[in-house]
Length: 358
Image (cartoon, rainbow, N blue to C red):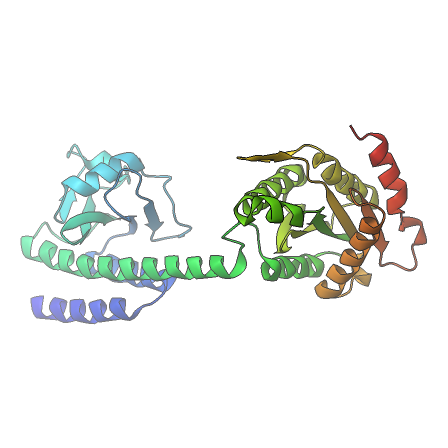
């Protein structure tokens, strides 16, 4: 019997070591350990390290939506991980039973993960059918040790993948906004999700005379101002929720998507709010000065929207029209030839903006 268990342990450990992604690894860990112990449900807890602020991951065997902490007092779990170094079966009469959740269970089995000799978490399973046998618990502990190594590896791979994806999709050095590639993908996704009659508005924003900052104050100050500008864009757009998002297109140029739930009037209101908001000075250490923005808007029904690159070109051309009139304003280019009433003049709106200038 023990030889069969050892062979099963060996096979399971090899499978765990070969699994390279989180979901299949968790499936395998729970399938093997629940089958091994005859348990009905389980949770898996993992601490990234032993510092106070270390992330605590929690996954559930059935209906995994992890991290699922609904049944766990996680602060108590963190302490429990460090004081119970060997597999053990607890019943309601044990003072530590409540810490492990599953209050309706007749018993729970705790099997810890360790890394470099330090407890990093554990597997908690409900209603195990195995007896409190030292040899069986030791073998389960060895299985869980292998599971812990596999989990450590896949979490590391997942974290590395997320970091690579972040480096690929975000302007991580300066503004932390989506870069041009991710912005274009999000615009394309929004275009495909929207109904044909809804309005799509793509804004191309440029900081006026930003080159002067780099020339006179240096690129370090310029980068700080770009970050402050990005934060201001996010604050202005936050009331619009997920239907408005910004990205950095390059240099001092930014993109904003509005819609597809926006009306034409609401698009104009948002553009005007953005321009007005930059009448307040951008402030960073050693620099306190107003830097205005100019916006070009490509606006029209989704069914007539071109591909994303063409929409960006159209919005950029509208921005340059507004620049040619002095900037600090916006110009709208309507890509719906059938709806000329929506082709608002940037000049008209600029005059209103300038009339309220300080």
